[in-house]
Length: 262
Length: 294
Image (cartoon, rainbow over all chains, first blue to last red; front, side):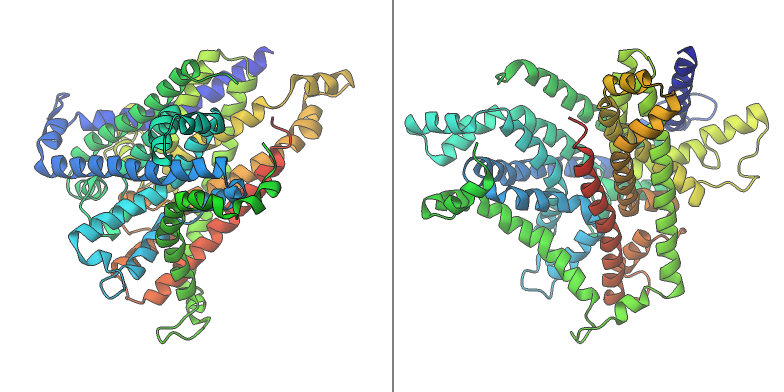
């Protein structure tokens, strides 16, 4: 029994070493900008860089829009499939799995071929079109996570009764979805939303290949041209990932008290 | 709830028109931004620039440079998937079966959630800061132990460096997927085996592993696909000095190299094929595994 415990501690300790060293390395490196002392100089420079502010702000906005688009696409679909069209479920599940199967670089390659300037729908030709295409691309990447979390949320509530109750009080479909269903699955929607945020905020391949100067390409550019700032950026990105995962845990814990037990 | 088979005919009646309108935006979106782009690539892989059906593009995949890029990718993905599975399994086993404090188990699972999503560009930066020429560990080894990592031929911008970096998201993903499977091993099975005189090794060999193997192999396939599609980490870490399939495709799309879109189609098709096979194996084995884990 003790042998087993020692082995377990050893496995966890070695794993801990492997996982904590890069975090320590990145933090240490980000503080070394001034010779001979630890300082937050690299962070100061990064945060004051107008390019950082612009690209980061852009990526945050894009992540939020992705979440809104994801909710608009997924919530009605998952709702109608559960309520009226359960036969469609396998098809929808298959489609929402696809973005995990097809490498993102292939999807964006397809965009460039289909929506280039000489095509029927020349989205890449204009500023607005390119940004929309990036937004649609991110919403596609987010589909698996959004659909799964919303569908799990819908499973825990009685959507048929809720819908009938709302309709008997005179609510139309849009109202049922926006005022009754969405608030009831809000916690699940939030988990999907935070995961989407974490994925979109530093995404590189879509942005780089569509020539959009967002946070991901900015980080790569910094990586090629600066020494200490990239580590500071990595620390910022790690903090965002950590915050998103922490918030997911927080809202799921919260939901355990707020949803009806069935 | 009735079964889907009973509802499907009803779903086609006109009174469900509204439901169909409700799901229409999703299908339109998926068609335009997921299915058509992918089909375009797949069809393009079998067409020449004049639009005739051909296998020439796929033939170009066999040229030495492309073949070696795919081969390095496959090796890298297989190696990190196998090591990720093995090491992730050991950590998952330690936290589920190893009498460790419950709080440690929960913090490791939370950390795994963070680390499995901490991929891409920032992860590459973290590893450069750690194992780069002036990295934290590189300096530590030199100053404290007198070990010259770079003198011994190691470089973070290499196959080995990339593999070490990929493991940072591969291991946690394995921990997240296999922990529920390990928790699904019931205590009674072990007790039953022991009461029949089985040793610990026999229990693992004859009971636990046969139950777990679909999960293990399935996760191996998933980790393979996960590593195979990772582009941003590799680009941020190595620039384009290491020729792996997704980097070659990236360069093709950018038009940095010989600009032959149909070769790009073929490389993309090859990537879809490999990840689709890996994911297909994962989904099939996952369904098998779920018979046991309830």
